[in-house]
Image (cartoon, rainbow, N blue to C red; front, side, top):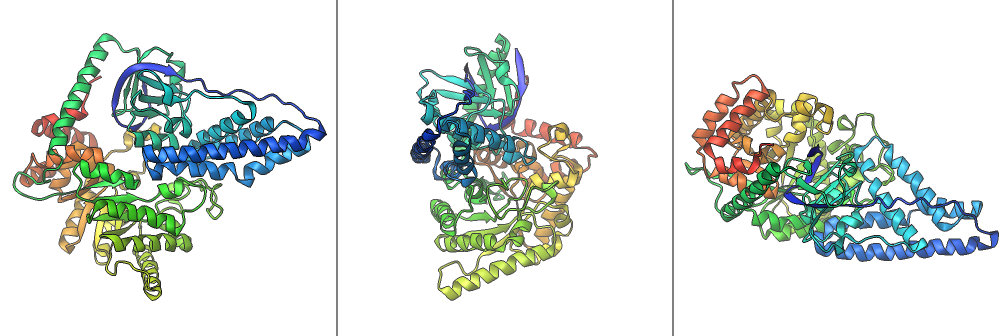
Length: 589
């Protein structure tokens, strides 16, 4: 029995036999053609490109039906790369100057491109290497007549184990047969991870060498809740996981039955529970899980899914779709939260070069304020969409009061221009900021005077407070939501918001972790936004406790000196007070 730890990118647990996919990485031989054949080779290249483009357009249409319009935009990224001069120019030059076959030119140019992606310092750029493999295989397949096994044609239930999966392969998965995915490569923001999550298939990536430890026919457990793959589990492990899956299903059914009940404590205090989303298509799931609004609509995917900036119209359509889907419910749209840490600088002409320390560089609101045309376009799209329902605008990574004032000034200018042009939009729109930098948390009283609401982004707040890169596995143990310094900042922000009568919510991952729900309520944070699947659990806890009970727990928690003491105390409390929810998240290995 072998246990491997990876990066969980889509939750769920599955036990099944494995199918290990061939990498399909066949070398193309160096072959020359006569000078008179060069024109014919160029024609072959053009036809292969067009056939590939037609395939991608068809795949995009099919993917839109399965995973939604927003996730399907990944294939627009493929189409734009396929037709880019950056790739086609060198291919044609190689055929004309070196008299090589079209397939060899494609092979060599794509390999060089893949190498540039592989050595990039930016994680998201490295994760795009699977897109290059996808395009290479597709074009060469049309040139040499090769075909690839369609994962949508599996005849029995299986777990797919691969060095990596291309986005095309993932989009073709039959989720009734493919019960899980495990790959050597990949990261949280890879296109393959995004599609797997949209399909609802348990997936773990970044396992490094899982393909060397698994053979087709082996029994494998995919634990997408904890990011573990267990190969050839023994009888005791199988029994434990089968019982775990049964418990998960029973608890899921019980929680789903309560999802639409009010989020109200036992002493009658109403709590706001909203959802975090990336795609408008997630709103239906959020509402079914019991959300009463959207507390965080991340707009980055519109920019990540393409190698060109989305137009105002494209953004307007996405925001409008989300607003209409809520049917009058509130939505908080966060402006662009990107920078050198997330975007591929080679894909967008006006992005700056990669930075040595992107998390402390030109990202989020800093990038927007340095690139006003992009910022103004997004604000126009949001404001146009605000005519269809209640919208709040939220600025990310504000670190000083001047940034907030500059952002609000740009927003005011855009609104004034739209009014002059007769463009319909909400006249009175709430504006807030993310509290995710310690400087803001420490000076929160000043910000309360100039915003309508605050939303605590614990992911970055913890990272910046503790000086820990949350994506660095070597120091992952130092990243802790239970650190006394973090809890102290949360307490101060909640207290300042209450004094100033400014709404304060929390939208980071911490809010969806069951161990912290009572602590957050006790600190005075009575509004939270979490991932849709976490909503029933959070509401179950809320409906099982009183505010006085939570305040006592919070007072005890803030007295501890270490994060371990805090976490153990909170875990014991949730286990004692709401045991069935605790059981949903715990499994002893």
